[in-house]
Length: 189
Length: 297
Image (cartoon, rainbow over all chains, first blue to last red; front, side):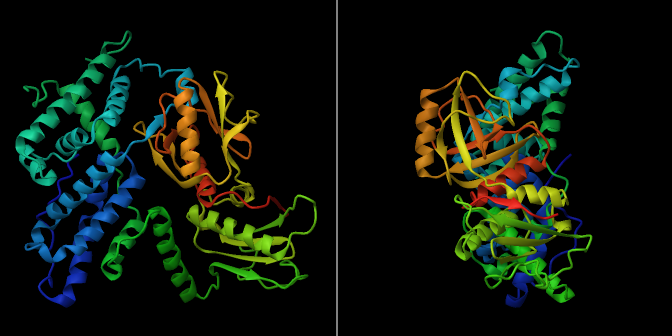
């Protein structure tokens, strides 16, 4: 499922040029984009609860800078840039140690006999271990279907940097996926 | 660097599926309300956003209820004069016979068995009220008289909408502790006998979340003293088990796979979705200063 930020078939927001209409225009634009923003943040962060915080932070930052937005039609991409940068800060700030629950420690997950579930489990675990910038690049490319150029614009990085991060992120994910596929008794490919 | 284009359709399909699993179908109504209110507030909310969100929800609910004339007050406490029982003819905002309302009464217990003082009852009421709010219930009333506290809660706010679940939530003392178990773990739900190295009001923030497999997690932040104790213990005991306990009962028994240096942990939990929310609410509000017993029939 693609979650592109722009929706060109929606009604234009009026009143942005009038001070009295700015608040209403912002609320209308933000509300229209809310679900896509929340879904994107949830994928980037891997936590719906933290995604709520990230979207709210982005809304506060967006409102503070709303006067800088020249073209309301660019609101979604503009908001996403704020949101993605906020999510990147949150990912970089995570230094949590994920504890392994007892059941998992004593009874390591048994690979699914069909293979597919085991490979997806491996992908989930590898995704959680990716460095923040690599996770962003992978998620924006394969959840948001963004082009490399769009990812560079969203993250404020150079195109070469984005390519590098996507390359190494995919490499790590692919290694985990292939390792799961090679386990005895499974392998869907 | 030649691997930008995936040459395996199966891998790409799985990757897209794993990412899509993380995306919820819609946005919570509470988030929509908060974002819509941003221009009017114009300021950044402080830490503990979950509580901020709940405060907004509670405020909105209070407005709706006031308009409807139901009369339930948002977290309002009615302190009755000494000697007047909350069940002794004092009118409550909502009839306890209402099928949507739970009426829950607790008696505050003191160590020496004497009747709890008014200040002690109020202190317990404060924590219990905070616990309800942390659980996402902003629309309730509490009243106290003698050593008893009665809560009136609209059940539709609770998940699950069960008076028994609310009684368990409010009635738990909430004494938090972490113990080292060495290499001999106990079962979740078992009583922990190992001495705790962290106990009391150690948790400064507690939230629920989901891990990469979609399972529920409890995300805890410890205060400075507890953080230091956790860092020291986990550094010295990698490979051993911890018991994270509430009221002496293990709620998680993780193995230490690395030092926890910053007092922040994310614990994968077994069980249904409501358990972590209950735990988070209890840990967020802190322990009751005195234990209580339920006296609701």
